[in-house]
Amino acid sequence: MGFFSWDCLGCGFSLRSGNPSPVWMRTVVVARRNSTMLSGMYDGYGRVSGSPINPPSKIMSPVSAYHEACWRVLGKPKGYTMPSTSSSDQGLRPEGEPQLKEPKTKRDLMALREISRAAKQAQNDESIAYLRKQLEKLNEPERAARYSDAELKGEKRRLKDWIRSLEKA
Image 1 (spheres, one colour):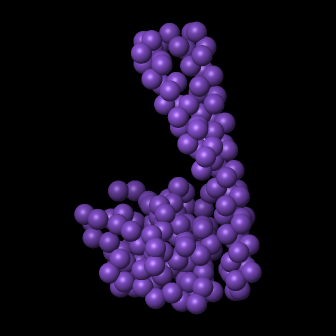
Image 2: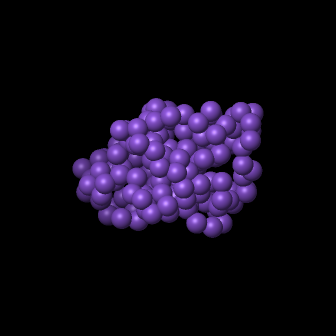
Image 3: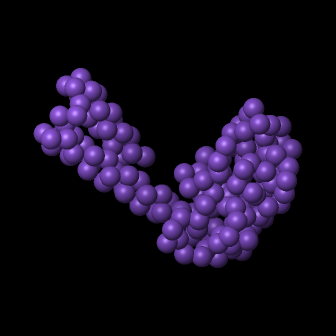
């Protein structure tokens, strides 16, 4: 299995692995559903300081995941509170993302949360624009000729449904 990660319940950014991400985004605290806790460096493969977060058969089982800095600002929640979402960036620093400063206060954490929301919306908008372009291509006769009528209708319906779901998110 390749890289994967979860979004921090504090700031909304992914648990990061490796450079060029700042150390504070790689230093994590994870609570399993049985409320056992792990802390240390996240490696991108589901391990914190060498210890697996979940057993291989349940690698993406729900966990409460935090950057340690966010966890401290939130008052060090004890145990599993709610599931973290799977990260769309797989724990890798997206191209063009500025170096984010470690949160020290709740105000810092709220600012990071807003930046995270805005970044995810921009990513979502790019996905919608891409899908719209794909849909336009299906309406071009020379491209559409590669599909049977049933395949073309099905593909257009799937793309339209996907665009609608992204717009609602």
